[in-house]
Amino acid sequence: MAVLLLAALSVVAMSSPARAAATPQEVTGFGSNPGNLRMFRYVPPGLAGGRPVVVAMHGCTQNAAAYAANTGWMRLADTYKFSVVFPQQQTTNNMNACFNWFEAGDTRRGSGEALSVKQMVDRTKRDNGSTSAYVSGLSAGGGMTSAMLAAYPDVFSGGGIIAGLPYGCANSVASAFTCMSPGVNKSPKEWGDKVRAAFPSYSGRRPKVSIWQGTADSTVKTMNTTELMEQFTNANGTDQTPDTTDTVGGYPHRVYGGTVETYQITGMGHGQPVDPGTGPAQCGTPAPYILDMNICSAYHLVRFWGIDDSAPPTPTGTSTPTPSSTPPPYSDTVIGTATDHYVARRITAAEYTKLGAAHGYNTSVPLYQCTAGWTDKADCSPL
Image 1 (cartoon, rainbow, N blue to C red):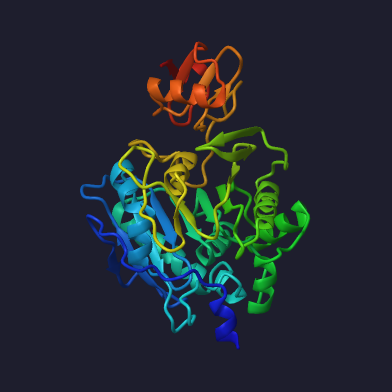
Image 2 (image 1 turned 90 degrees about the vertical axis):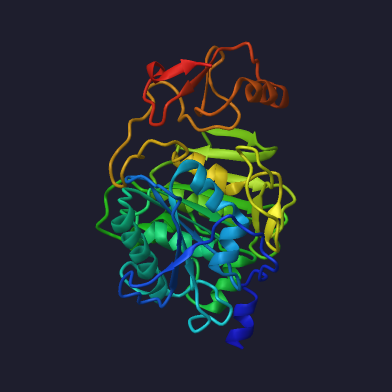
């Protein structure tokens, strides 16, 4: 019966994955590996020291190679110069190769699968000189991402939860079903307390969290978007009123306190959104539960985390300046005032014109491109 129940937590295995220019290589001897996971890693040729490491976790019945090939992470690693670790579950741990996001022994700090993933990050930092780490995952991998962000806020600077679940929502297969559908309603403080309890002595900065959910997802109900937002806004010390409400790629997007964001992908079922193509904001190849929605989630995670440049990012656990008079710089539309607009550094004049037409912005207003970690208008230059 447990095996049959676990099958319902799965996403369908990918068939005929797209051919990639390179494939992740297996790494052994990365630690005690109490969760009995396998480690695969992609390192772009000539990667300089100090660049980040991103952990990308597959869903049930998937594997590292197929997830890497179809989600676009390796192409982004080549473009923005970071390494990617692809943990792989084994059927000896879970019949459907699900990460055990609902098992306390696998999600606690210092034990089980969570510790195995952390050891993969440690190994990559030693090998490549990485100073920061980020974690993302789909479905069961998204549930495990919540666990990693809660248990290891001193390791990860940011996370991406795609069709995932709040940390501490379930402690058994049966309760996992309830979390997935219809969802579990708790107050922001109740959810935040679960995160804080995962590492009670921690008092540093907590990771930025990006939450993605399809509005037509019948496997993980959309209620989980709200519960995840409440959990991580409360843990990060901000409220549940968005500071930014806009659209990105035509989809509703909200930002809370500059540390948590949500994407609601209209009409998308259970899966991870991609946008096939060769454009700078495109990535991914459609496959079962890797869905062409004309928006590449991995690309936008890289942008939100602030690792879409060639400069070493701020190491985990240190503070970064807050803009003195304007919102944080990340936006795919435009942010600012009626007289000044600010955007991430890679927007072009043509893109600004296109966005202005799409969203009703006055493109005659001066546009400034700002450097990563900007603190003042002096750090920005006119487009």
